[in-house]
Amino acid sequence: EAGVAQSPRYKIIEKRQSVAFWCNPISGHATLYWYQQILGQGPKLLIQFQNNGVVDDSQLPKDRFSAERLKGVDSTLKIQPAKLEDSAVYLCASSLALATKETQYFGPGTRLLVL
Amino acid sequence: GNSVTQMEGPVTLSEEAFLTINCTYTATGYPSLFWYVQYPGEGLQLLLKATKADDKGSNKGFEATYRKETTSFHLEKGSVQVSDSAVYFCALSRQGGSEKLVFGKGTKLTVNP
Image 1 (cartoon, rainbow over the protein chains, first blue to last red):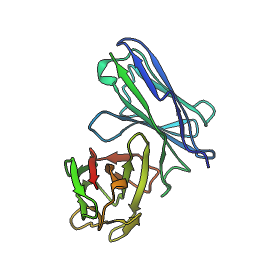
Image 2: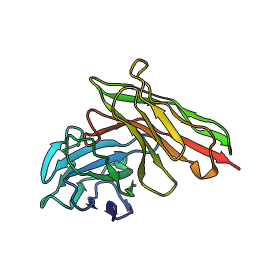
Image 3: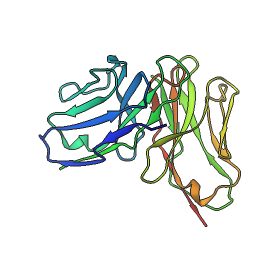
Image 4: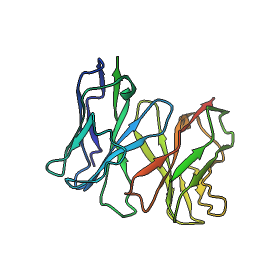
């Protein structure tokens, strides 16, 4: 079974530029998550989708971050404009369904460096 | 709100030593508890989990018991190997495993031959 795919794996940009990350979840997984992992800290949830609807985006900085999952499969996370403090690893995860005991499976992450 | 506190690292052990990584949590209700592991250059992988009090999760020689009375979920292994070198994260989910995960800061383990 293929795992969660993410691209790119690494990205270096200058502050005030924009950047986008892509995630393809495990086939058949209805729930998709984006986490931000700053160096030395545990991952923090940014946004959670159930199919193409948003379940939780309470910790998403909506003035600069946006995410979509238009067809309920792939998802894109965008930052515009980027700030230095956005340097982090962005992790995508998926699980079969919401409000269940299903495990979340994580992708390899995209490492972002903002200069 | 919900939170997880785990012991600060890094932890350095010799091969075959006993490992304990402490984890305590604060949560309302009855959360599910997890240990995830991140090997160098790889993504997070679920190591083990427990979904109710007194449950013991186990995998690859690692164990952790859900202790509601002490709000703890300490990770243990009787004899570590060099291949266990990784960062270990304790996490909770308000219900089940598909609700958002709240992670601790992680503990880096290095096992020397």
